[in-house]
Length: 108
Image (cartoon, rainbow, N blue to C red):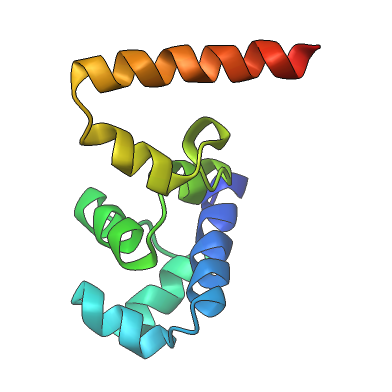
């Protein structure tokens, strides 16, 4: 199996433990056996697309984290991205101007 799959499983396990979720509890939430989850965490099985989605939702992570180790897409915290999704086009434009201003200010 590839190195990326090993990292993938390790990241699931690390995140699960950081949230104090037991393997059997996460497995039950995902509708799989604890043994199947263990094989994923130990790089012996590849999860399906639906299972990856369930893992991301259950552990409150993005696929970027599981596959690449990036907890936040482009280093932007998930709560900011989630909040931006509910903004109007005008709000997004204003937010863009504010972020550009802050970026320019921090360059100095």
